[in-house]
Amino acid sequence: MSDTIVTRFAPSPTGFLHIGGARTALFNWLLARRHGGRMLLRIEDTDRERSTDAAIAAILDGLSWLGLDWDGEAVHQFARAERHREVALQLLAEGKAYYCYASQDELTEMRERAKAEKRPLRYDGRWRDRDPSEAPAGVKPVVRFKAPLEGETVVEDRVQGRVTWSNKELDDLVLLRSDGTPTYMLAVVVDDHDMGVTHIVRGDDHLTNAARQSQIYHALGWDVPVMAHIPLIHGADGAKLSKRHGALGVEAYRAMGYLPEALRNYLVRLGWAHGDQEIFTTQEMIDAFDLGGIGRSAARFDFVKLEALNGHWMRQTDDVRLVDALETILPEIGPERGLGPTFPPDLRGRLVAAMPGLKERARTLVELLDGAAYLWRARPLAMDEKASRLLDGAARARIAALVPRLEALEPFDAETTEAAVRAFAEETGVKLGQVAQPLRAALTGTTTSPPLFDVMAVLGRSETLARLRDQEKP
Ligand code: GLU
Image 1 (cartoon, rainbow, N blue to C red):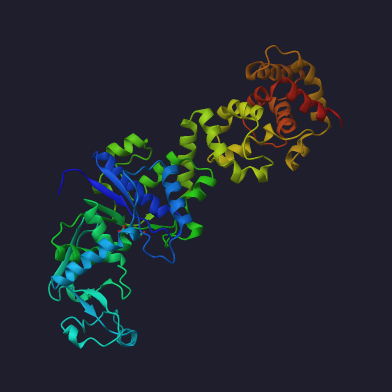
Image 2 (image 1 turned 180 degrees about the vertical axis):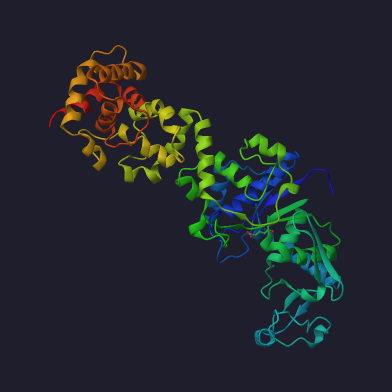
């Protein structure tokens, strides 16, 4: 084995890049980056019925959005079918594989019998030692692997430890189907070998495959890569991950308003730990990642934690970049909020100015945008129920009395408006809240908003005064 670590991410393009796949990709990427190695991408598109170009595009987009780049061109497994066949024929020639002519009926019977005896289906090896001259005419055979009958197969897994199978449990699997197409089990081994993969990191649903694949490696005299099978992700309640729990495509997380750095940070901690550190920059993850830190029990998906991390990373993010991030999901979340696919320039400027106040409290980009809705509401503002209850006669009178003072301010910013409102409250003998609450309602149409004086500063003098005057009228 060479010194360089080569990992790979090998998705089947039958759907989007789901959250478990994204974590697998991240772990492979981190392992490679940590050791100055390479991460390869292999699209396992041998299932021609279920593989689609749309899914391939979604997977590549998802990886790019997450910032997980791969080295070299993506390998398409189906394009390598000829090479897979060649290896199957080599195994045949070496007597390590054989033609099997068992008919569908025979296989069905085997399955029924196994079912009746309540044991897993195992092909019984009926063609293993038969002479091909006994082959029935007109039947296209499959090629089966001659798996060892006695002894054990051992996988030294970096996460699961030493895992042992009695070879009696592992039957002679199909390498080539009767139409000559390779099976997944053969293709994965040949591709990982030919691509120089040194470390296989994937979900533990592939653990039994690892045993079967190890047998094929041994038969071919190839080194078995280091294996690490990561426990699957479960829902917060411990049950298998479903859509309700967050088993969604990465693009859904993007549209829910998560930043890629937050999702990366969340995913790295989903099944991997480095002391009790929760917050990781990308460089910190790269520096700390190791297979030894992957736990053996299933990680639980927790939206609350993801939101908290996202809030953290939004607060760390530069205001212009945050508005850029908002704009990338605007086509998805804008229309229902009365916005087009891009921000008009004047709104963009106001959004950037409003970010410091807004990002303190928002946990997702969607919340950020909702918090900013006061910026583009048309006058006169529609009031929500609480806001209109606040704006009673006395409150409107206070607003009317305050307007001339605000009009005269120079400059008009968060400090001067705050000073003016405080002075007004003091002089008229009311609590600050009795002025501030109606002001907030009049300026935003709601009773929850970023700090009031930020709102005024961002709206600017003329819009602020216009909105307040709208409320002077009874
Ligand atoms: N294509 C397989 C999957 O998407 C992964 C195979 C592997 O990692 O070996 O589940």
